[in-house]
Image 1 (cartoon, rainbow, N blue to C red):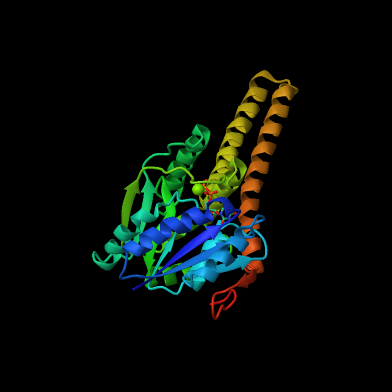
Image 2: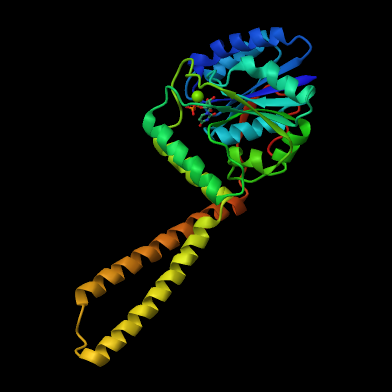
Length: 316
Ligand code: UDP
Ligand code: MG
């Protein structure tokens, strides 16, 4: 059996060697398995690529794909999946937050227990800023209410998959990729492993609060159309309210006369309705924007250099 590990790296010079040492230890434990370490350099601005090349010179299990700029972790995962040569593939972070020591257990679940994929979830968020944890929890709860994609709280992208699963992921060539949703969407038999959150071994997180916020919007737009239904529903609700208001005004006019009542309330109502209209247009617009990006069919990433043999560009 050959196992490919896909490791997206963005400015990870501080942690790459530590990661590699730990992987070497685990690889020497799993003697029957042939390994391929496929690092995807996502346009790092530090010496990540130089470190990768150095490692590749010394160890022919080390492969790298280097992008022309930062395309994001999702693009890096996609490029990795396209060029993973193994029977099994695992996606893991470079910062050791996805403990390589779990690999033997994951391997066993697929090879011996017959699962198609093994996913991991952290049971706590120890060491993370509380505000970030709070919003993350809200996001997962919301997502599970509004979309059919089965997205588990605390789920990591750390996942081992067999060939079928990888091919299914690759068959979705969409531009706006939200892996956590895609994993659930493809189905198959998945085993879940749980572990305590591990803090980053070195270096810094690449996800600012703002970046995460935008990512969560991407997730919602990619996997749910409920916001569109909500805006339609709001429209209907406002119409019903308006009918009542009209009836009320007419009756009041007939009973008490005097048609110049209520200019201030009129202004409030106009502002309110204007606000709702803009909100709904915004929601519609964000779906339209995603559609726009999708139909342009731009490549998900652009390659700068690699040592992967037979690298076959974006389409596979
Ligand atoms: N990453 C990437 N491209 C990006 C941001 C992050 O390839 O634009 C990689 C990063 O190098 C790491 C993984 O994604 O291997 C997870 O990032 P990080 O540890 O910074 O995120 P956190 O664990 O804090 O959510
Ligand atoms: Mg991390």
